[in-house]
Length: 295
Image (tube, rainbow, N blue to C red; front, side):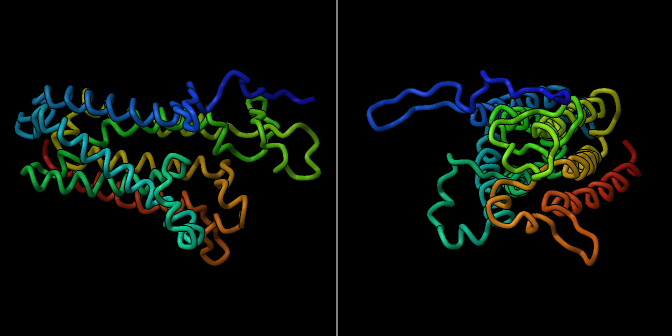
């Protein structure tokens, strides 16, 4: 038998579950990741607002009270955008036939790209309503999104979902329920790339370190849109890289795995790569333009 890592048997998607008659009250790690991500992100933005020297003209763009108000807008934008993004990008046919299923958010099915779009729209509307520069709000959000990404990917790992292709590497993880999807001629137990941890490390930890290095050790925040541009670029590249080893999402495995790849002639990109490529292009453009401005 080749070296592999057994998925920890003590990990469960639910932190606790209590049956109350016909109703089950449960707290899942994925829900906790969202809650913790929002709360930590809120406090980090407040921290950034208390450092006026980081911002253009030495003036913080928002008050602590405005950041608290922004949190509500972002929560709504992330949840609505993430759900609608999942429906439109990944499983439109199913939800067109079963529209009421769109409301069943608690059963899972969220898209990061959709959530980012929803948060962007909510942030833009909030900025316009409160007379805040959209660039300052975008740069603020770019500072803290990696926290939510890190926690969300750890929750994906605990849920034993979104794992990668089969691998014989010693760090491959034997996830429960993944063996039946291995090639028939696979010579060993079907360990998988732990792509959730790859993404947690790249999109969460590495990207977060880069964001806060730019904020605390450089004048990046005094150049509007620079931090946002770097965020979009690094996230897009990291996501496109990890997609090389990541399996198609469950809805494609259950129907048409080939449908996960968007074909451009003889060249193909996964859905995740297709949605991330525009982020890289926009991010590079923003960073180049912002980098030319004086701090």
